[in-house]
Length: 406
Image (cartoon, rainbow, N blue to C red; front, side, top):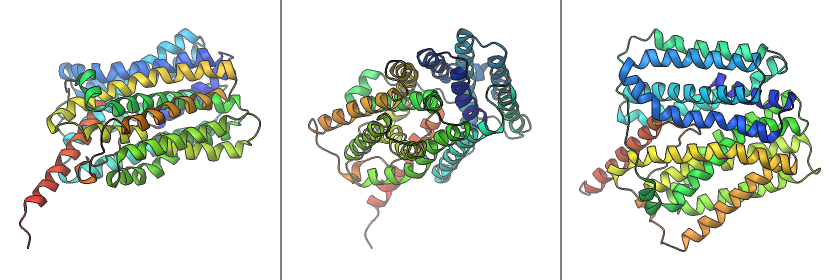
């Protein structure tokens, strides 16, 4: 995650330095999410053929090499291809690492392990933003640093003596079934993908175009991640005791308001925008986990694993569109188009959620699935782990309900 966080923002800044234009940069950044989506589907089959450690080592080596090619060949088409390859590699790395964690974890501590995994993801991604300050993005130094960090990731797995886990390759539930069970969950997950792609693909491009220094760019991206780290659990737990649609609607509309304010030209200093970044990240990034939990509210237990994998594909599709659309918005409206685009689809999601609340009654809080936070860049494995937590917690509730009163 250090290498992933560093290279995403680094490439956005370097693309601006090279004069690629925001629309072209958005297209380049979308390549990562297209590769990430493919990698989550491809990796299980590759692992079954040659094994976890070999695939992990190969993907880490490939990811380490591709970041260096960006510094050698400054050509948009080459950069798109390298971002695509990086997406495949990181997705596969996540699948293998998460499989290992999931396989070696007992059900009674699975929630704790997933929480620690989330903290590791946030710390790694956020610290990667701070590494932008180590050298000039216009030189090759940061590309080399990212390559070294990614290469080091293979060491723990190569030295591991624990048995390799069984890979999880669930069959995806059809989009038609997901839409029938939870239209808001599917639309919200797609919108969460739009946010992920826009923020992590084009956030540094916006900050650089807005005149931020390198230190301010790293702070801008880091505060978005920090905001989500702080609010993910309080928002999720609040959704466990209220109609989850109300929470989704509230955070969506407030996030849209923050985006509208941040997009107003000439009114805010860079320091103000850093505050907006933290608040927006704290509201917008938890929507993915909220929508996963809301979708599970309307699914049978035996459908959830397939539904989770289907939602990963929906999330990935939105992530591909996000940087493309935000790049076009910035090319048409200037840097403020980044936040105007974010405001536009958050308003759309908010109004859709309001409309959905008129279409069916709310569930009682006791009938809702428990909230489980999941990473922004999610693989099929971590959503499978979340599904196991849902099932275990629900079984625990049923056991308590069947116990005689003393």
